[in-house]
Amino acid sequence: MAATKVFAARLAGLVVLGPDGESIGRLRDLVISIRYDRQQPRILGILVELPTRRRIFVPMLRVTSIEPGAITLNTGTISVRRFEQRHGEMLAIAQIIDSTVRVDDPELPELGNIDVVVTDLGLEQTRTRDWVVSRVAVRERRRLGSAFRRRGAVHVVAWSHVRGLTQTELNLPGQDVTQLLEQFEGMRAADVAHLVRELPEKRRIEVVRALDDERLADVVQELPENDQIELLEQLGTERAADLLEAMDPDDAADLLGELPAGEAESLLALMDPEESEPVRRLLEHAPYTAGGLMTPSPVVLTASTTIAEALARVRDPDLTPALASMVFVVRPPTATPTGRYLGCVHIQQLLREPPAHLVGGILDTDLSPLRPEASLTAVTRYFATYNLVCGPVVDDENHLLGAVSVDDLLDHLLPEDWREQDEHELTEATGTVVAHKLPGGKP
Image (cartoon, rainbow, N blue to C red; front, side):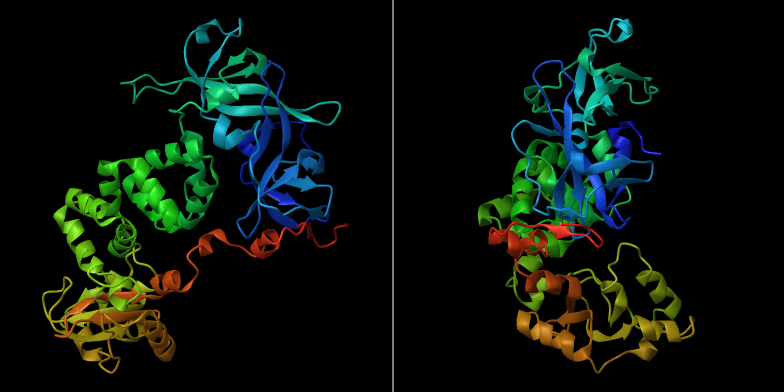
């Protein structure tokens, strides 16, 4: 049964269906028109994320029903122009929830003159079939020093009794990000990066500052270079150095290579020497060479390592599938640059051998390693020729310097703005009216 009263946060992530039940995408937010008087704001429409990750606006009049498991539209044709927020529009989840407000409800005197946080918005369908924000769920803000204090009760009050939800007040800094961070839990870093890029600038900065270094590093590595540089500048030098330490050395080197030499050196000086040293070594190589592409932290073993130990190393969940596809065997030391490079072992070979056998007995010595000066074209041909997703890089004295993986190769082969493009980009660039006719939909 279709609902006529719902809460905004509970709609996040719901599948959006066409009239014949075909999936269009998922609801990511609601677009609201905030008024300067105390009248209830109207819901203008929903923000839908398509399978291509593009976010589009669907007017609320196109929504025929809101149910616990899905939202259904009354049309099979929708505009797929990328959503651009207009003046006077606010996003319910990204901008309003988690904001600090005051409540003047005479029935809740205990909330008078204290700051409370918006935890949700109650939506209601009117007799004219419009949807409005009728209620606001709030919770008392935790005071400093009360980290272990139980969270206060949630109160639901009428919109007219809430102060602090004008556009001016919502744009003030210092807004909480609890609800947004909860949405990001369990999501891949690339998907979080896409969602962060779609946030208004103020909220984007607040979210980035709230993420811990490890999670932020994973997210930043999935952003376009221009966004990475802008974000680094907004963090300040101390936090930026912490972020670079948490990033993979090759990604940190790529980012520092885009900065002026003085700024890059200042950040390197603030980093822990153990973290900055591999980054400095990578910066010695030209960007579009094997040395510039490689990671200095592949799986490196000695010949006396057992098959069981080797398999345990490649099971590391922090390894990418490409780096886990091959182990490199060297004479000590095993930290790059290593001792003499002896050969490699493919993971398929490890799986075929008895666990007690040694990797030194199954080396592939026929695969020629890459040289650090090898061009991007040469590396691409190398991968194609030998059907590889990972390859060793050695210096003139046959010391292993690192490994190039296919994901780093693709990052440099694709256009610089590939993360910002999707299948509809060309149509949009030519100014053509864009519409998407769903299966079974009527124009």
